[in-house]
Length: 421
Length: 126
Ligand SMILES: Cc1cc2nc3c(=O)[nH]c(=O)nc-3n(C[C@H](O)[C@H](O)[C@H](O)COP(=O)(O)OP(=O)(O)OC[C@H]3O[C@@H](n4cnc5c(N)ncnc54)[C@H](O)[C@@H]3O)c2cc1C
Image (cartoon, rainbow over all chains, first blue to last red; front, side):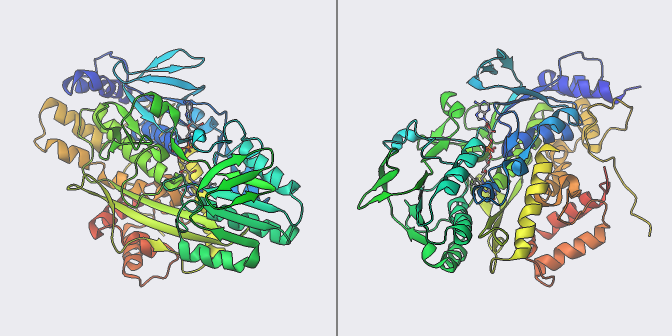
């Protein structure tokens, strides 16, 4: 009798042999192998769902440079002193033990889409049937003269981990009456509401501990980029503590004096938190994937494959978003499920689903416990060949609330489990 | 109270189990396609996963396959009709919510029915 294992082997073989052999259960072809680069919101979700939905029939290897997952969502609460780094860190152990993902803690250094191989720093060259790439973002440090090599004095804390702790430390060391200045880059950047959430959480800490201080939000954009009315209200609630300055083009920074040269102004700060301009993670750039504006990977939305590059599926912040789609962890998780479903169909010789749906929900804290949200639902539009936000759906909180703060914590718990548990 | 009968195995990974199990519907249909028996066409096979894929859009907040990790309602194993009623009430606005009314409006009634059907067929506990 045909047992599951031999059938699954057959399915894997079908990836290369075509449909027929799949049902004989006799093929000994290697099982299909999907390589995932990046164990963040997109990549970890993809690795788990590929194993789960194939019922273990497809081999999955995850290459991630960091030994544990540290979440950007909730990291502003660490900056504010309301959470510890340990509270926002999750182990990769369950991905391995429960889901059978092979984890390689290493740097992926190059991709060869023609040969279907990935080079690593310490583990040689690995081959794949399909590659899932979710490298997040990297900074264009050269865009701001004076920034390069100075992230110790001028922490970005836009990748969670040691940078988060460093910014927390500098905020703690700041004297009462000091200035915490933040620069927001031009959109699109990772997490549109993130900078404004950070301003609020930092202000909430200062209000309690250093009330004579100031949070200066220098925004390269003409206005608040997400939840504008809600953040405007939150800023007003902090009175003179928060100063919001739109259209603030950053010309250069000086790390020694912690000062920022703006188009019409020069600002000296006690803590200078420059969120640098960013683009797709450098591995995507080095791989020669098609980039829009030299920054974001252009994808086919039915498979998430980079346009014109068969077998390389790109997720998360690295890609050029469809209309109304933010660069969020929630959205990266949804990209991952779309890609996992498509990859399994393609490996089985089937077309991808023709009607994918994605959602987004981003909670932001306005202090240590009250939160606001923005939500949207995106349905695939066959004419436009991309997902479009559903009109009349989605929306914002009516006001910041403790209840939504509780939901925000529950969101984090559940999405971390959805990726990693 | 009698729980609704589970229609399919939980989709938890069987990475370490190698037991003989029935083929899931999608794999079975792939198999038929491979032998050229099915005339349903590729689209039908792809659509066999539609409910699963739609329900996966809920998992970020409500847990994988609707099994909440805490702080959010678990949906796995709930009666299909009850789930559908709730979703439609969110969609119409008759059920008060902070966010679900905004999300439910993004799906067609058919999609909501597929989601309710899929989640109701999941095990409440792993
Ligand atoms: C302060 C802040 C607050 C935020 N709040 C929210 C929020 O509340 N809700 C929300 O939905 N989103 C939020 N976000 C956005 C969210 O963090 C990102 O959108 C999400 O992380 C994108 O997922 P990703 O998989 O694209 O990238 P990441 O999660 O960054 O994962 C990329 C991974 O790839 C690894 N990697 C990259 N290159 C290589 C390589 N060459 N070799 C090996 N490993 C590699 C990295 O180490 C990293 O682990 C926030 C972001 C910030 C900065």
